[in-house]
Image 1: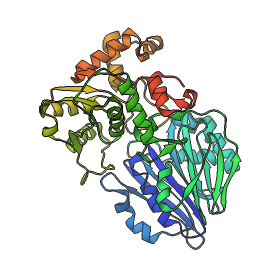
Image 2: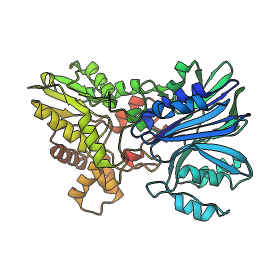
Image 3: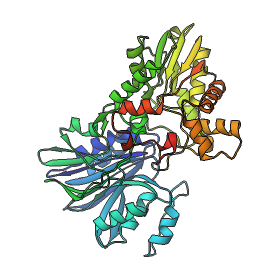
Image 4: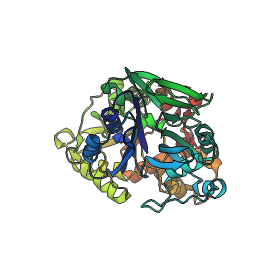
Length: 468
């Protein structure tokens, strides 16, 4: 997916920018970049591949060389950014989080100045570069940003660095966040609010859906008022968010405890111990254990000293292999035990099946699985999640195709999304058999939304029910 951090300061901003971006490393796996501006040196930019090394290792020399009072940085799964642009707006740097589904159509119909775009290593166009080109179609940044957000099918949240300020523009439906912080002489904006606390910032305000604001070292001013509707990605709480982060005032770790609690309330299995698939499943498991009274344990652990979060290959077969190699079983806590395992979700099912086989091979008597979200039925069309896949690779859709054939109507898919329908139960049981679980019970959508605590109409649930 991706994350970003920006700083406008009366002093040099590099310390805060460097560590603020680093605190977003869990949100991306492939690229990272920094861009700063100073009156003496103008714009400076650096982008590195972080697939095999942590952010700090790759950017250590840049940290000591780059200087400026204002800057932005990002972590990304795919595109190299920030992109540095020279145009009639002057020179600016831009970073984005989101997804453009109609990128070819956008270029063909809306970019009229003959702009040329470089292909990325995967043969696709850099969406951040395309957003910059769209902004350049208008006479000022505000009109350009609004123009880009209106014609893009998907979602785009962005930061734009200019010599005098940083423009902050949240997706029109608020699917991804921008939160702000402040301290004496500095303001910051970022994807996850925990990233600035250790840097001495106090919590500021949340940029609203569709809002455009401008940030300087003196403050943050709204240029376009926020909209009244929002659809925040619920998966941010379930999986992507760092435990210390809060979205819309709701803490990630607390939400996951709530998820586990709701799973336990509806369950009737009595395991010997409850475990979470590390790392995101752990908090869900703690919530389940606290509510059920079943002891929480760690019958397997993730080996991380030489396998940082950023080391995740883009090829799925390699990703599965690395994920398997990271997990180390503890047979003394597994042998002859009935285990209940909670993961954040089941996407393809490959990794969780291999985890279950690891537990059985280590002597487990039973393995009951409780995903912390409902079956994923649709590929996300709003965010470029690194875990996203085509719908026919989703284990839920593969199973439905086995049961119904190739041509499945939306009406039938709705039945399979309904946890009280016979078709849903049949699908879940087929998945259980495929993955060799003793029992399988997904989190219900209504319970998951209650675990967040925000009004349901403010949360995006597209990947589970197909509703926009």
